Length: 176
Image (cartoon, rainbow, N blue to C red; front, side, top):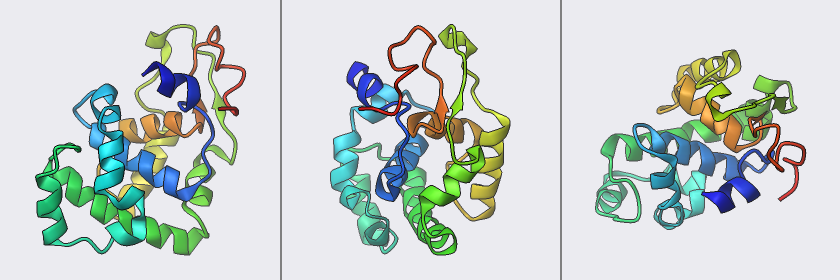
């Protein structure tokens, strides 16, 4: 968790594959802790073709059954099916917007929202922006993308800087 915080969390991400990875992992977290998902991150990469949306979009029942028996991931049928569905929708968004990056970053007008978090209790579970993103993703057919999941995704990919003001990452979220 410390390495993830110190190197990744809150660093702006503009690579579509990495954005799909984090959207998938945040959806997998629903009802669980981030630590649970982070411990399986490598397993997810192996199980889901390194988050290659084109390959995942072609998965069928055979792959679903394989994934349901893979101890390296969270073996929840709904979350697995959602990942496949999201890969298909992800490709549609790429076609429409040129990249998933262009699409998601529009919800923060292309630049990170910098919050002044003094204590972890000050971090909201969702915001107007995450609710708007969630509503649009759901309208497009995505799953496991409620406002709280979208906010966690926005934090993870640096669309929102929720590092505490006394954290060394608060002033330098753009560097790894």
